[in-house]
Image (tube, rainbow, N blue to C red; front, top):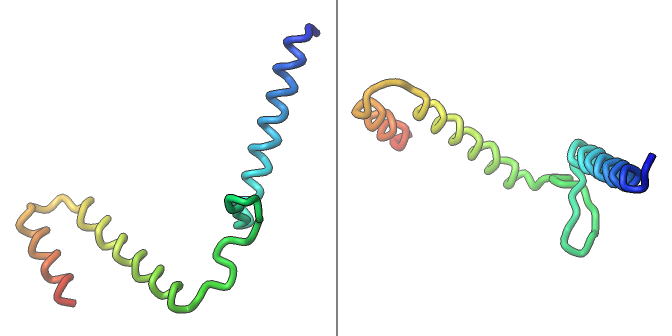
Length: 86
């Protein structure tokens, strides 16, 4: 094995280890701030924030339904107005 093959192999192993480490952290919700401090993301969400997040998810679902619907634009506009009234 030549010197440059060993260098490429070592760099590839380092990149693979970094990818696996980041995947593990993302799976377990571990985030890192600008100073390098690690903490769990969304640990103990405030009930008000959790409620707002659920409301936003519901709004996104409605928008996805409107966008993917194949009806005429007049029907879509009427549905948007009816949703605003709720």
